[in-house]
Image (cartoon, rainbow, N blue to C red):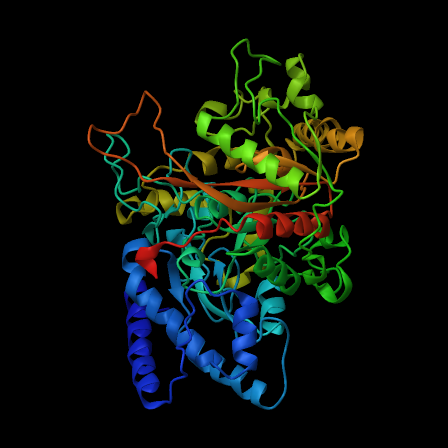
Length: 571
């Protein structure tokens, strides 16, 4: 594979070709631009022959070449993107349309297999890995007509390498930045190349935010679709685990991993979700039997502007809105800042005005429980060397166990293409290549996973998994929704990520505001340095397979508010 600089050179050559071609062709009265252009708008322009797929790719490549030096939103650009666009243009001219994404460029997080581009996971050991098979979702997208234009930046191995690694950093591509405030963080201990404003989670929405492509596929184990969507003022759908096949996606744990779309609008996310989903269960991923796809795998019929009318939406005040003293802590925890509280009051007014019935408050038993053993706030995933074997009785080992079990299973599917054969071998490779930058922040998360024995530790893992489900589903989301007969729960920001991730439940986040950034008193910004406002949105969360209802509610809210903003400096 060509190194990153070589791929960028390809992009620059392609943009030169694009400019020449555009100069030779007759331009429409109103020039077509991809900036902030939705998938339905792209579909309409292609159908009306206002633009070709080749011209779309050319415009996106120009934007990547112009801005990605600053943002590091891409790891690999598809050198065949123009050829693929030409082929799809020919099919369109012959009256053949593959599906709803025919000729539309999208990106994949770089832990999703593509056989024509490397899949690095951001790990130096996999810098030249070209997998022997496509991910199921990659095939589904291409069957729907999508052009995979690039592989997107991520935190290395979806943020299961080192507990101190900053979000959106990896050894292959360095530090990815958030365009809402990409300035270097000036604070001591944080001035290592990370930006003032994080990109959120492990899968960056930066490229979608600044129109490098129409939308991107992220992956989430706990927050890595919702969080970067929120941080980049995007819509993100974290589906029910199993709704989208995980075959061909570098794992953390099959218990919680799921791919999902990240886009600028709810409609775009709905279209991408349908294109990613299989028509039938994937024999390579048993979890795909959990949810039944909608008719024709089409979520657009749920895009109803009046869907909030009569909907019952719960407001889980304790911890998520208001501070609470419960479980094993005598210190109040949780709650919102004054600015966040004001925004959520506005949001509730909007929902009420749109005809929703608000159940306020609704109780989540595992959040309010007085007994620490029954309280989710006292039961977090094990993380870091301080919760290694022998020191992990008070945390859930599901993630670290799953990484040992499922990462080794994934490596085995690579056959002779596997650069290493086990998690142990990867750790050893990283140690041997430290001078090349393999583990700038260490590899504590890999260490605490690899010390486990998949067979001998299975009983403990299964007990922890049962407790996860009890606190997040049985006495969590399911209990709250059943008690108040709810269609969804409404969470500030993406605060439902943890409680929804463990049982594998779906959520959708929608942009709403820009709010001031306040640093903790322990790490204040230097005098005279003012961080720029950060995106803030809301999340609708429901039970298993509730995507159609959540999409309907999110779309109605989006249409009633229309708060998504674009960055003027990237227009």
